Amino acid sequence: MHIADVSHFVQEGTALDREARKRGVTVYMVEKRIDMLPELLGTDLCSLNEKKDRFAFSVMWKITPDGNILSTDFHKSIIRSVCKHSYQMAQDKMYPFLVSRVGWY
Image 1 (cartoon, rainbow, N blue to C red):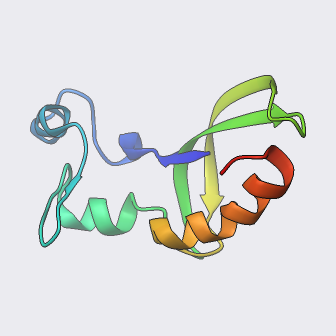
Image 2 (cartoon, rainbow, N blue to C red):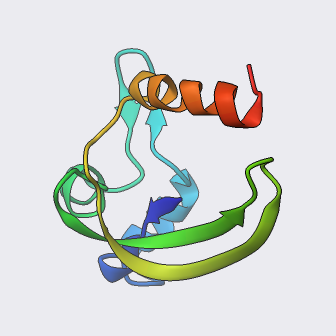
């Protein structure tokens, strides 16, 4: 699992850092969103857009076929997303696996 690493663009203790910490996350509503970061950072440089190298924090798990976690590793990384999914697209791709391998749903 990966989450964007904004620390390459937002220096600790700056006005931008203080404001981002107050906001915590970008909030998505039906017809509006309130960004944690300025648009250039939030939707481009710090966004895990497809086919672009991006700085990230990553967690890697070793998991048994039954879903038991054997080990967990956290590290900084550079990732290149294959494609950008909506929540529904991701769910549609995961659903067959969850049913057949894990027995969820």
